[in-house]
Image (cartoon, rainbow, N blue to C red; front, side):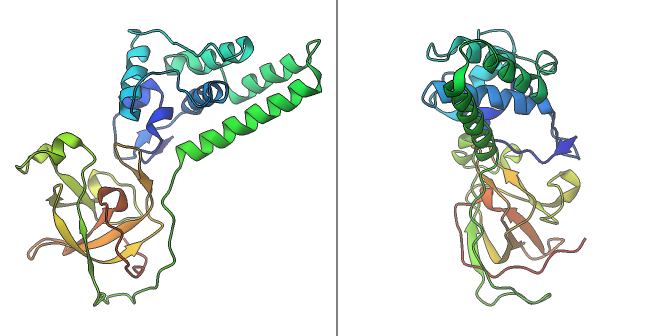
Length: 272
């Protein structure tokens, strides 16, 4: 299947870093969840440590890509017990094809089979349940981290709020923030409809750059989910006014593309 580009950088498999963004979004496969489970299992036994070194998610992502390309080995913490080390290694196989045989069902069967061996004991059963609960909760919490939806008022269709605020465009790419020119490669797109997939056919011709200040009159708190390059994720969108002569006269800026959180009424639900 396909979905909007989502996911916390620390839990993305190697192939997702190179996945093309098409009209339907990015391709999603169950093996990406298997990879994320391997990361969480390692974290459970290593006090939250990642098997891929780096001071930031982007740096760890670079280490993931090196591993995926066969240029670096998988280095797990010695604190991970042998059984869980082997299971995590299977989850963290470097390619989609190598992970494909390891489904959620087969992994659970391996875990259940281990508990049936002599010496398994009730304590190990409880430990297994704790690890699995922690892992599953960790994957869910790490994969989707939305900003809180605050209660807001509503504005009638066709009415522009008289107390419009402003939002300053923020580009997560540091190289673009440091540029003083308006380089096309550093421009950001504004959506036509915030509830439709954020793809090329849903972007207005007018582009914006880091530091641009836009007038905003209302917001949609539950639009299309968007994640930026630093893994900030949100479903909130701001309706912004475009310069005179632009077509259309308004567009939508995802909340991850600004640091501002103005108090604005809720927009009427867009209809396409």
